[in-house]
Image (tube, rainbow, N blue to C red; front, side):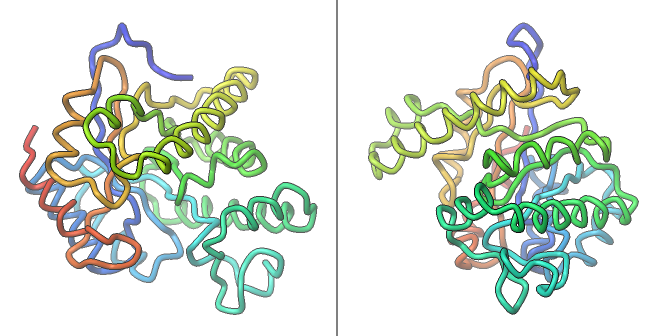
Length: 269
């Protein structure tokens, strides 16, 4: 379920990819201590996972959730247990159409995915950190096959909140018409996925809360100070999430990580 617009605004500003690298971890902690960051989403198979957990435990004011990874990232289980999903390194491919098709039609792939998702939730639970929320890398948790699995596990492991990226397409386009076709296709795709997710949660009578607004979809890799302030200006009453990808260095995963970190440091709430 989502909050209603009649409720006062509750703002959550989240950093994704916590645990991916030491530079991401450092950016997350600095943005929380010195800026406006309130939450982080943890990659439990990230190379700097253990460090992220230690930093989170030393920073109890930072809300930490699970960043489910089943595309373009490392798996938790060994590659031999996920032969239909990962390569020899145990890495999910960065191919959403091919991977999504396989997950939709292959029962073998679905069984492997179910085991991997449970392993990710279990690894998070083993940290002892409170599970503040669940979201997904590339929003792949909204895939029609993946979503029911993630919802069931989020409920089982006691997560109160699940991300559904309800961004504002028209306001974003009025601010910047660059990459208009990509924005339109993305808006249509996620409008369908979001409606489907809402129907599923309602039918299930799920206790999971989803944001009324969630900004970041159309600014992925470009959430600089101007974009962050624009998102804050568009935020209405209810539960509002803004997510970013801060880093100390520019990488393929976070091409403007330092700019996004700077935005978080400059905007104080």
